[in-house]
Amino acid sequence: MSTPNNSLPQHVAIIMDGNGRWAKKQGFLTRVRGHESGVEALRRTATAAAEIGIRYLTVYAFSSENWARPKLEVDALMSILVNALHKELSTLQENRIKLHAIGRLQDLPAVCQRQLNEVIEATATNNRMTLTLALSYGSREELVDAFQHVAREAASGRLRPEDLDAKTVERFLYTTDMPDPDLVIRTSGEQRISNFLLWQISYAELFFTPVLWPDFDRPHLEEALAAYAGRERRKGLTSEQVAPNVA
Ligand code: FPP
Image (cartoon, rainbow, N blue to C red; front, top):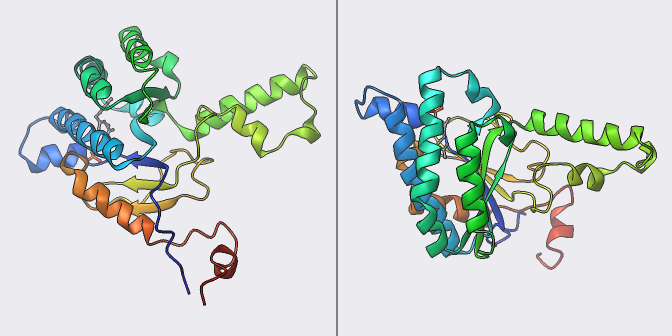
């Protein structure tokens, strides 16, 4: 018998997908309109998550692979990012949300890096929820960066190969100091992980919804949270070990 965990996830990660299809469905001539509406969906979702009591929300905003999109779309996404950071600072402050970013941030245009650092600094003492933007992010790239770090430590004699364990690897991931996601949501009906937090989601619950990201709103988040609360999280144990008092 499976026992629901009845709890709120501490960390929710979202693969925000379907902006392009949404724009097409609305009859817009450019996919960029979908990304613009995607920012609105992100504002609604982050505000709702903070109100509900989620402590960490991590969103896949721009993947390593997204650099290969047409230059016009990449440039538009970068400019949407700069504008959104500027415009949404007040939303973050009002909701006491701390901004954080992971990925190869050094590859972002200088203006994005500056704006990002400004908002990260301005929100550093907020403590209701941490919103992490995954930007120029790829999980394999993150692991490669971590392995390089580990190799350097070993080569310099600071780390003995036999002392390497999962905790040490985690110290070198971009997400060090963050708990692993408990729940991953992907919108737009696709059922893939697409190089997102591969190490960190080892035990996460997955929730897929057909809703396109620009249409995503509080009730969809609540639906995902209700599904999560109904799941039994065994992490390799038996049902009896997880809920020993349930007949
Ligand atoms: C996937 O939709 C979405 C993205 C590649 C970008 C996500 C960006 C936002 C939600 C806006 C916020 C952006 C930043 C940079 C803060 P898609 O374009 O792959 O849609 P499709 O699968 O329908 O083509």
